[in-house]
Length: 171
Ligand SMILES: C[S@@+](CC[C@H](N)C(=O)[O-])C[C@H]1O[C@@H](n2cnc3c(N)ncnc32)[C@H](O)[C@@H]1O
View 1 (cartoon, helix red, strand yellow):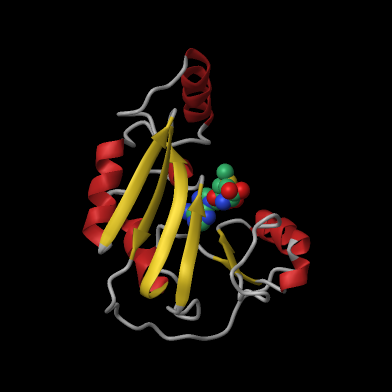
View 2: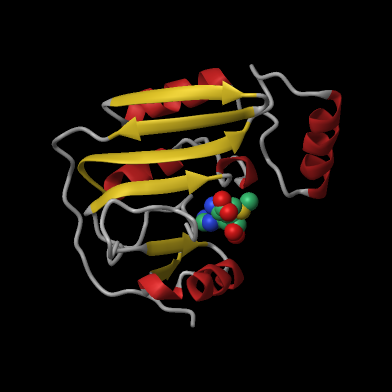
C-alpha cells in the first residue's frame, strides 16, 4: 500500500486485521492517508460499523493463514462481499497446496509453516478457490503463479446494504 498508486489522490483507506500489532505498524507507515483501523476476525461477520461501501478490498496472503472452521474458510468471501459496494472488487493472493506446482523448496517451507501452525492451507486448492469465488461473486478471475493464486472477483450490481458507522483505532 505504501508503494501503491491510487486512482484517487486521497483514498479512503481502512486496514483490518485480527491482531493490533500489524495494524499499528501499517497505520504508522501509511500515516499520510490517515487510515481507519479495524481489529476484527474475518472468519466472523464483520462488525456493522465497518460498513458496506468499499469499492475495492485487498485480501493478500491471509487465506492460507486461516484455520478451517466447521463450515469451511470460504465463509470469509461472504463476509468480505458484504462489505463491498455494488460492482466492487475483491482482489488478493494466497498460497495453495493442491492443484499448484510447488518447487522442492516451496513445498518444504509450506509444510514447515503448516507444522508451525502459521499456515492452514493443507486442503486449499485452485478448484476450491474457484468454487468459493463463484459462489459469492458475480464474476471472478484466478491466475496461478507457482504455488500462489492471484485472484480478483466482482460483486454483483445489487448487494445487500449494511450499516456504516464508527471505527476502532488501535493507535
Ligand atoms: C501474511 S500477513 C499478510 C498481511 C498483508 N495482507 C500483506 O500482504 O502484507 C497475514 C495477516 O493476516 C492476519 N490474520 C490472520 N488471521 C486473521 C483473521 N482471522 N482475521 C483477520 N486477520 C487475520 C494476520 O494477523 C496477519 O497480519
